[in-house]
Amino acid sequence: MGSQLKKGQWSQSTKNRVQYSYMGLWVLRMMIKANTNAKGLHWKTKKKISKLDLCRYMAEHNKLFRAVWLKTHPNKHYPMGHGRTALGEQFYRSNVADQRRFVRREEFERQMRAMNKKATVFTYFDKGKIKKSKY
Image (cartoon, rainbow, N blue to C red; front, side, top):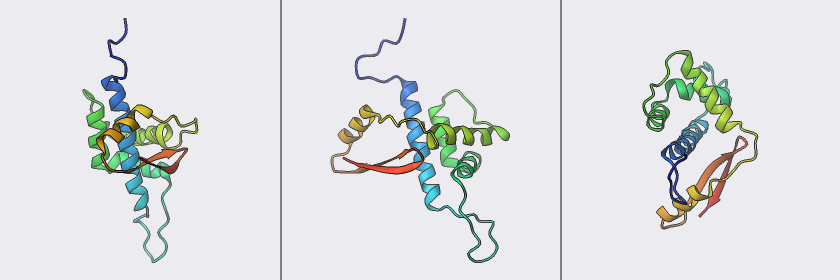
């Protein structure tokens, strides 16, 4: 029959999907700021890691990303072994490198404006690039 939501309300699964997307991109943004390869042995030999490798590393080792995934995927277990690498690749393809036209979530942004009384800057990814919008 369909969901019985009132106009302007979101289902919990939609809220979880949006929260996972934005929080995951926020964690990735923090990792991009500190993006150096710790395996470089000599001075000035540390090369930047690609965004795909950062997403793989984030899914395998980052505890904050794991907590966000577990919170937004109730009744599921976090994957082990190769499944974590696949999760990082899936996050990269669906959120970071998505070349489709970016659809801004107007309702989500309206709620953020309502929660914040003072002007804030909201950062989001569009086609793999960081963009900012002010409220």
